[in-house]
Image (cartoon, rainbow, N blue to C red; front, side, top):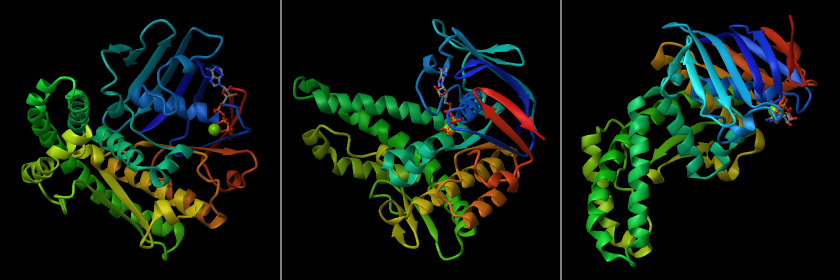
Length: 371
Ligand SMILES: Nc1ncnc2c1ncn2[C@@H]1O[C@H](COP(=O)(O)OP(=O)(O)OP(=O)(O)O)[C@@H](O)[C@H]1O
Ligand SMILES: [Mg+2]
């Protein structure tokens, strides 16, 4: 799928912007603080009505405006859609497909799929397990609405159980419902683990191939999905087979949960172990290696999504080339084709001459195209 044309009004530092894009690689260049990342943020917003930088809409509306609008013509194999989002300071935002108001943002990822790589994504390698779970959750949610539902149900039960464990000393009768919540958590955990395990298996395959290509053959990237210790190898297991194992883990931690007041068992503690050349990437990887690994994981996400949807999502690469040596930069630029790509880079980057189907120049919220 690709964005043919886009119009932005009153969003971030754009007052009024309208432009067409190439189906292939669009390079957005310009100095610092001119609006390059803002443009990627606007595109991302059309795919899920969320920003990857802030919560809520208020910061997204231009300082001097009360209203913002992002609108694009998206061409996709299944169906073309004109997507429009209107944001107001005092009112709820509105979403339209082909002029028809939508009740929620739920269908947006289906109309415009995106995979984003931003400097914050280096946290997938450097950060704690929560960053890797977020990566996995947003990627699988885009592909499987059932997963997204299970995840939000899990979140609600988790919060409830946490409250029971935290407050039972003041109100001991709360403990009567503990086992019921634990059981429900185990049930949903088995579904989440089922989806995560098969997605991670594919991610490992795709990302290690990508990483080998970008870095050279000596650096092997290995991704392994880790869940509760009673599930040794979840690959190929159905939720019904996982459930008793999760329950066993839960039962053996029951007393420890009551004593500590914390939820100690379930899918909310999952992780993806990332190794480069047999060593933990979090501890040993260099800056360039971290970036290469994170990028390989994102490109792998696009690959999986592309296979599952039968249409390639739009790839947004913010500041991806810094810290990579020229050889790695070349490999990245060779590997990102195959769908529509938006890639930002600063003016001085030599990459501008080496790549791209269309080159845009961003200055103070205005975009010009240098064909
Ligand atoms: N709500 C807003 N209204 C007006 N301007 C805004 C708003 N939010 C952000 N900006 C401005 O947008 C600019 C930043 O844009 P952006 O993050 O896209 O820069 P960039 O071109 O990606 O720069 P860099 O190369 O440093 O990453 C800043 O000057 C900031 O003040
Ligand atoms: Mg930027």
